[in-house]
Length: 340
Image 1 (cartoon, rainbow, N blue to C red):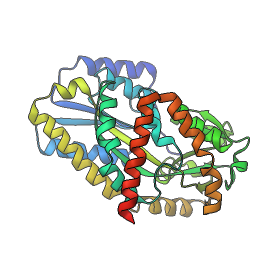
Image 2: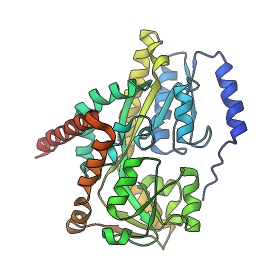
Image 3: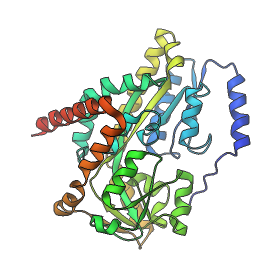
């Protein structure tokens, strides 16, 4: 397993104090949740490149663990210590409950072309989400997919019955927990830094992530049975502290918007074929790995459990969540019709 050491609480506190008192208006700080070379890092590095090549600003990128876990970097962004953050709705859902919509299983399409068209054209994503994020002090700059979710476990999963008595790691996200409850598993929230050890020691029996992250984090070493369930895509979002963004001069706002657009285009190109490459690396590295792709009949057994998760989402989010879900479905229907 790669060594990824988190800063101590004292170390984070000292760094935060130093950053908050430094008067470097031209040095922007940006944190994300992944390792060097992973999708969020590819996005961040392209954002940095564009900003630095087109202005006098510099961008300092912090990767996973350098400033703590996901909730730490969100807190630092909301307090203004960081200017930019990349965080998945899995964690943002604690602040913005509607962001959990991405964890309703079998809501999203499964093929990349349709997924990308949806992100480009969706009114829910491009018009409704920015308003929800702004209410919490965040400027939503980009929302983008990273890859299809894949379940890893201590044995192959082919039916809800196979999830019985299995402790599946989830992010601290109530709706994701409800999804695995519906699937028949025991959802077990656990910080990312404890997942590898939890799988290794049997504290948890499985987890879900995009395949590139399973490869990058070495999860297949301790959770070798991969199941493609087709139940969802890992989605993430790049945001700015709203007060910081609104305080920028117009030319810098344009710079930030253009840089995030350039990073989006670069990242979408990067993820083409990434899942296949990552799976090949995993299979070359381990003879213990098995790959299970559910057939239509097997998928249907899981799909039948999705409505209860939708109901829970509406219970959690009320009228705003209901409106978002309706728009989400309308956007998906429009994209699907375009494909036919």
